[in-house]
Image (cartoon, rainbow, N blue to C red; front, side, top):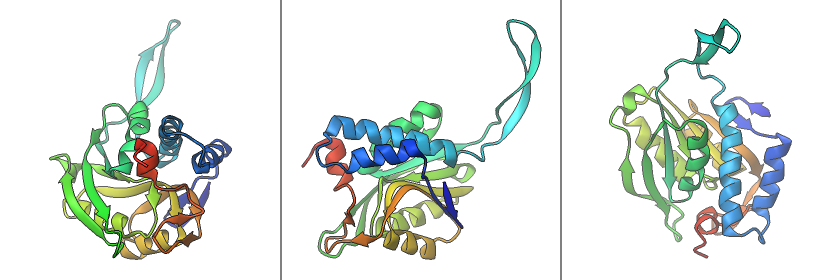
Length: 212
């Protein structure tokens, strides 16, 4: 794991192996969805490292002992539609009782600017630590707007989790919201003329849902 201030890049061998499979154009939608979920679950271990613990008494088959359990903490995971939905199952496998909101943003293919069309967050969002999910952090515009939308609801904290980022996307998100932590599994250095990360892995939403 590489920690560059508020940017945490996952370099675990299992994650990097799965990233290679995600990049492969021959990986089909079913396997792609499974890989997205698996990588998200592995990343969640690190992103949740600061979850508080408390000590309780537990009775083993042999005796009563002290052991640690999660102290109550209100979390909310917010996928950015539609590709962010592919990351939700990996989260729920680890934290099945968490709340899930949704933000709908799409990128205008001519201007590359994000356009909002949906926002549904937990009613008690002000009491929750929020993790925004999107497989791709490309130009960064969608992520910047999503964070701003959540900030208007005054959550306790915000983190952003993506699987692949560009250097430009990270720079824009960090400069626009220097107070949030960014977790990503891999970083590429360039964007093409259409705003896609290169070498990248293509359009994550299309590959997750088999729409292209």
